[in-house]
Amino acid sequence: MKLHFDKDADALYLKLDESAIVESEEVRPGVVLDFNADDQVVGIELLGVGKRISAEALKEVAVQVA
Image 1 (cartoon, rainbow, N blue to C red):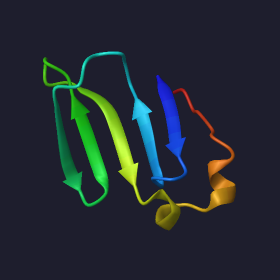
Image 2: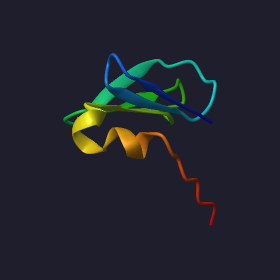
Image 3: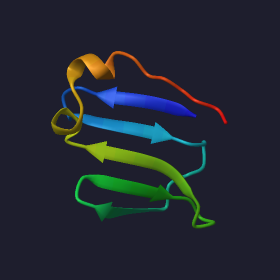
Image 4: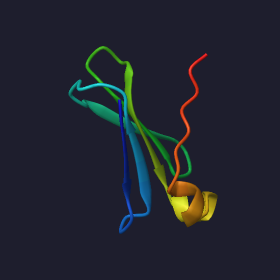
């Protein structure tokens, strides 16, 4: 799993695996899901991240495993 922030595009992308993306769907304004050939979600893109979270909060990512 990879997390990438593009400052210029103000977008955050979470890549869940290395599957080829065959389709994308904006499920909510600014939230795009990427699907592979098996119709599984393999990526999540959040647009307009600066409106959703502060720049300071982007400097630290916490991962919780249940």
